[in-house]
Amino acid sequence: MPVLALPTPRVLGAAHSTTHVDEQRAGLLAATRRMTVLVIAVLPIFVLTLTVVWSFRSADWSTVLLIVATVATVLSCAVSAELWRRLARLSDLTALNEELQYRASHDLLMHVPNRDLLHIELAEALTASGGKAGSVGLLFLDLDRFKFVNDSLGHAAGDELLKAAGLRIKRAIADEDAVLARVGGDELVVLMRRLTSFEHLGLVSDRLLAKFVDPFKIDGVLLSIGTSIGLAASIDHESADELYRHADAALYEAKERGRGQAVFADVALRAKRDARVRTELALRDALAGGQIEAWYQPEVDMVAGEIVAAEALARWRTNDGVEIASSFIDVARRAGMLEQLMVEMAGQLWAWRRSSGCNLPVALNVSAAHLPSLLTLHEEDPTGRPFQGMRLEIAETDIIHDFEGTRQTLNQLRELGAQIVLDDFGAGYSSLQMLSDLPIDGLKIDRSYVARIDTDWRVRSLVTSLADFARSTNMIVVAEGVETPSQADFLARIGIDRGQGFLFSKAVDAGEFATLLDNGPLGAHLTSRF
Image (cartoon, rainbow, N blue to C red; front, side, top):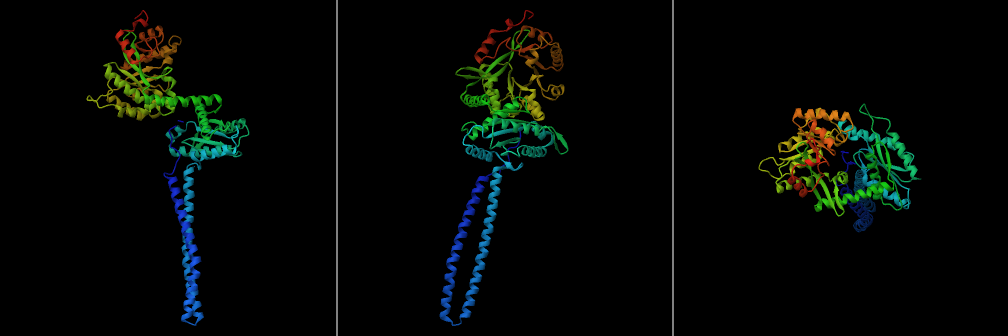
C-alpha cells in the first residue's frame, strides 16, 4: 500500500525479553519450592534435636520449651519474610511478562492486535472452521488521503484520526464475531471469524463505508476521509497467508479504481494477483540476470529530420520476446524494485555512452523518490560533471509530493552536468509557478495533447501558447507521441521542432540505434513541407 507512514509500534527485543522473564520466573519458583521443602523438613528435626540435647543438661522443661518456642518463632518469621519477598518478586515478573507479551502482539496507539497476532487469530479461525469455504472473511481497509492529514496537520493529528476511525469501525462490527487489527501505518484489517455467506461480508463492508461518510473533527478541523476496502472470504482449505494476500490484492484494486469503494477478491482478481506475483519473481531474476536492457528511441528535429537526442527505455528480454516497460513498470513500483531498475538503466546508459562514443544527449526517466540514489551512483569523474550529456526526465505529478526536497536534489544533479526535463507536461499539476521555481531546462508535452492536435482547436491554442512561453524562456520543448505527418507539421509551424514518436522510429536496441545514426536524417517520415 503503498502510503508513507510509520510502521506498527513494536518493542525491540520483546520476544527475547519475554523469554528472559519466563526463565527468571521459573528459577524463582524452583528456589521457592526448595526453600519450602527445606523449612518443612529441617525445622522439626532442628527443634527435636535441640529439645533432646537440652533435656540431658537441665531438668527445667519449662525453660526448654520457652527456648524452643522462641527459636521456632524467629525461624518462622525469617522464613515467612523471605517467602513473601520471593512471592512479590514472582508477581512483579508475571506482570512484566504480561506487559511485554501485550506490547509484542498489539498496536500501542489503537490498542488493537498487530499483524503478528492477527495472523495467529486468522489461522485459529480457519482451523476452527474446518476449512469450509466462505466461513472466515477479511476486510482490508486503507484510509484515503491519510498522508495529506499527516503532512498538513502533523503526525499527532494523524494519530488522533486513526483512533477516531478505529472507534467507528468497532461500532460497525460490534454485533459481529470480529476483531479489528492494525497492520501498517493507516492499514486496518477486520477479521470476521464466523461468516454466514459471501453476502454477509458485503453487508459489513457497506456498514464500514457508511461510517466514513461523515467528516472527522480533529483539533477543531473537519476532515472528510474516506476508506477503500479489499474483501476476501476463505475458500476450501485456504491458508491464512493466502487469504491475507488476496484481501490485500483486493484493496490494491479498490484504490486503483478510484478509492472510496469496496472490491471483492473473486476468482478473476485472485488470478490477476497470482500473475502479478509471478511477474514480480521473474522480474527480480531478470534484474539479477542481466535481462533488462536499455533501448533507445530517437528524438528528432522535425525540420531537418536529424536525430538530436535519444531516450533510454527499459526492455525485458524473455524467452517469448521483448517486453516493453509498461508491461512490468507497475509491478516494479509495487514491489519496491523501481529504484533498482533506475540504477540498472543508468549504469547501462553510462556504459553505452563510453563504449559507443555517442555525444548526443540521452534522456532517462527517473522517480523523484529515488533521485538521491543517482548522487551516489556515478563514478569518479575528473571533470566533476559525470552527468554531462544526460537528461533526467521527471514527471510533474511525481514532484508535487515533496516539492522542496526534489528541487534541492535536482539542483545538485544539475551542478553535476545533468539537464532536467519535466516529463508528461500537462498531465497533472501544470503551473507557471512550478516552472519558475524548479531548475528546469525543458518540457515534454504529454502525448494526450499531441493526439488531439488535429481535432481540438483548444488543444492547438494551448500548445501554441506553450511554444511561445518556451521560446521566451529558452527552454527545450519536445512533443512526445508524434504519429502523423500532420501533427509534425503543426508542431514545427508553431516553433516546437523536436518530436519523438512512431512517425520517426520506435525504441530500438543499441545496435539498431547506431544504424539509425549512420543512415542520416529521417526525412522520409516527414511531410513534403520539410
